[in-house]
Image (cartoon, rainbow, N blue to C red; front, side, top):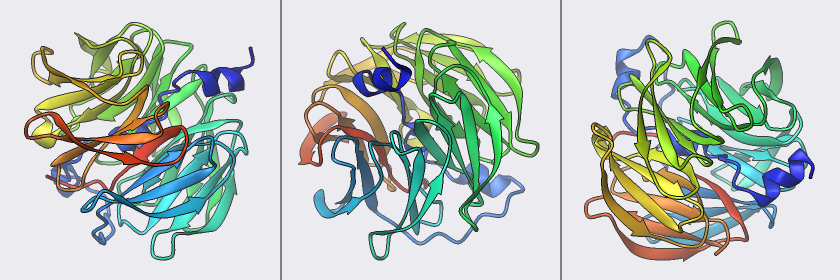
Length: 335
């Protein structure tokens, strides 16, 4: 089986920025230039086998628009200013840039082989794209929509996240069982951290001190200390843990379990499971709404989103989207 076929038939942890913590407080404390944000309450869903992105109005949970993109869109990220959506197209080896005002593609950027996940730096200046079959990360200058650097990482990079100060990018390498830590100032790998089996989803905690990694093969979450780049704890999750999101104030983790059709709600401090929430078939991606009140879970085999109320951890509605929703993104903010 080829690597590309493997990525299409198994969850590839392409959650990247969709799973990054919501709180903007660390940005305010960091010495980075943050663009003025236009409030964007929409959610954007990459439908892998439809070659489209669904635009969801989170107020009504209705589909506002459907945007054609490249072939097999696998990762999606919304810019910090809420004005552009970047889509990693797995089989056309490029990134589509969507203008949210018109819901049209305004640029297409060629990247490496099988781009599976994408994240935008907090200042909006660069996009980092994990190329699964190439084993590297493309760095895109968002002002010019050109690739300015390529960083070699591990085997089958599948998930990606960025620190709140923009200093580091974290890349899960599925076949290596590792996370590559990229120094964004030099675009070199500063550290490689051994985690669980088949790491997929990755997210940064609200104050940047922890990185959480969902390990599909070992059914757990690795907790990385960002100061030492070492794993300090491992939390059990469900079967096929492949996406992780941080809830309001960083108190809870939400882990999508691909094989269980559930989301595990885990205490971020002690690792204990608080609740297990049934969702759709094969949950593969997650994103928290701008106000922190809802968690959107993309169910790849039931072609829908489960909307979880984060105040009581129950599914309140289900939104039909395109076929094989592989990734979902919302605007980063602070609930």
